[in-house]
Amino acid sequence: MAEVKFDVARWTKVDRIVGIATFVVLISLFLSWFKISYGPYSYSWSGTSANGWLWLVFIICLAMIAYLVVRALYDEMPVKLPVEHDKLLFIGTAVNFFLILIAFFVSPGSGYSGPGVPGVGWDYGAFVALIAAIVAVAPFAYPFIKGLLAKKSS
Image (cartoon, rainbow, N blue to C red; front, side):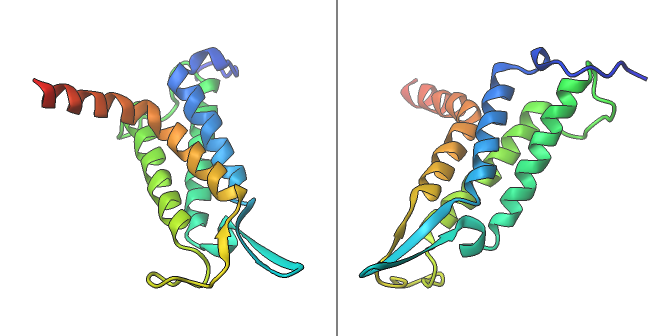
């Protein structure tokens, strides 16, 4: 059995960026995403109460954070995964990004088409989640986009 010792030095720079941004995404799911104001009254919805599928993002975030903690505990993973480390993080961050992007544009009361409830606007939680999801996927998307632009200019 391998020695178990929590050591953040086992994380790469990308692991740290993904871990912190994923934790921010996790927290932002419970912040106010949408808000409606009518005179002196206002009501807001969290991400998970407005869009139920964001519970999937919550589960993915928990799994990714747990995976990174296990990576910090062991020099060598105790279980052989069928997917490489970078690909696993990319898949998790990409799925989270797309689900959050969809949730960002689907306001409560709008269904999947139409203008939605008049007066419903975004609140700070939606912006925090979107920015954190972009930051989490950026270490993987940037080299990919850079490679595509290099091929296009050649």
